[in-house]
Amino acid sequence: MAAKFSKYEASSMEDALLAPYEYLAQVPGKEIRTVMINAFNDWLELDPEQLTSIANIIRKLHTSSLMIDDVEDNSDLRRGIPVTHKIYGIPMTINTANYVYFIALQDVLRMNNPDLVDIFSEELLNLHRGQGMELYWRDTMTCPTEEQYLEMVEHKTGGLFRLAVKLMQRCSHKDSDFTELVNLMGAFFQIRDDYMNLHSSEYSNNKGYCEDLTEGKFSFVVAHAVMKGKDGAQLMSILRQKTADDNVKKYAVSLMEKANSFEYTKQYLDRLEDRIASKIQEHGGNAALEQLMAKLSIRDTTSSPHNLLWPVLRPSKIQATVCMIGNIDCTVWVSSGLVLWSNGAFGKGILSRSDATWYARYQQQTSRNKTVFLEDITRQRRRERQNADANQPENNMIELDVTPTEAADMEPVQLSPYEVMFLLDSGCLEPRNAETGELCSSAQLWKIYCVSERDFDIRYAAYYYYRSKGWVVRSGIKFGSDFLLYDRGPAHSHSRYSIVVRNRLENDKDDMRGLADTWQYVFALSRVTSQVQKQLVVCYVDRPEHDNQGRIDLSHYTVEELTIARFNPNLKQ
Image 1 (cartoon, rainbow, N blue to C red):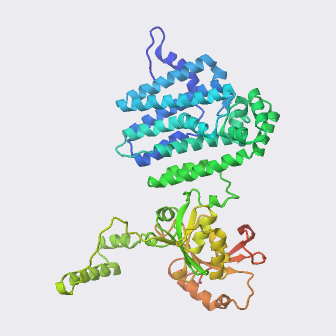
Image 2: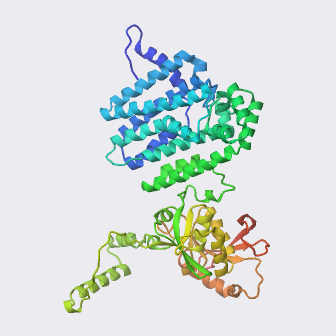
């Protein structure tokens, strides 16, 4: 940042002009916008110089806008320190913030692209338009509707987000439009900020306790309580006073809790998370963005099954088809299973045929002129059969009348009963009857699975347990076990553990499974498991006492594991 001065030494005056900006900039924020820019660059692939320029422009604009915000809101703290205007005064703070705005514009002009200037001016107008709407509501004590509030957020918070991504899109050789995703993320970040301002001790330490109430601000939570709660008039009176009294603010928070405004806001944020995750997948996935959303998620990981899948999987409701066979069996199919497979290895079908490691072995071995594998022989025989078919007389060929279609020739993904129930419990699946189109309830499918498979709940408890620990759980039937555990899924590596599930409290003499648990059986299973380089684990599940009516909360089941290894006496001591 350089400038020309006629009477004063340039560097010292520049330092003085920028001192208020540097005061706030020296205290690092969460750097969410920088993380977001780097994440979007995984898609847009800008060169490092362009990416750095855009990141610096956004950082200058963001920090300057915070300085103006603090003046307009008469705040006391920002990032845990006194606000800039409490140190340098209001006039100097405003001048410096505006000065840095134009320095950022100068940086845009240096990029030698007129389109970037248009984007810059358009989104800064939007930013100030949104800020003006919020100030107008506050100063006139006008409570906005939810629709009006979301429009304001799209201008204010979304403006800087869109500016960053639009600048990147214009500089990129990729033809992609992320506007809708960016708008959703802007709404999520602002509403989350509103929620945390009134509900987070961390925010209280950095900005003061329930600062939005002291400002008299109609945040998302406050606006809902005023519009929907029975005590809206009281809350309006508190906002009008712009109180700094913690006891009054605590009472205001209790009014919002009474109006169920925090829960409503949390549910709205959950839906935004789902939509954002779905949009990310539509654009091909982005691990950095998913990690950012996981970091910002406010879901309660101790009480909600949704969190077992986030950030691994948070799609919107995925449509599934249920094929009923009488009332004792059902098969669930997902026609577009890419999201499920790529984000948790759910389902069995064309996608579940793992990226085999034979090709890597083939490349390694052939480069050393070593053994030819069975795969080579198979390919050679396939070519021989194809050549033989091609050389047959034409009168032996069968002519088929095939009408070409544009439909994708893709085998659907079949979900196991355990996967179906897990995805249902996580709110990610919407199964419908193939014949009637009616929605199949979780209770209906649970009853069918329990009738068709003895101890289904025991094995599902084990499945749920391992999924909740972060394992990818697949069927272990080909190795004589119930489940296999993968770190990331069969497309990435072989499974490490083979799981046999047992009901510890099962004393039923008619249970034929118990007869198999002899040492000979265990030795044989251990031998099979060790030959494929897996560890055998017996998972004992205790089922709580119940009257066999309906499901039991999984929190009442207990799990204990026992690992079994085969002793090899040939090993040296």
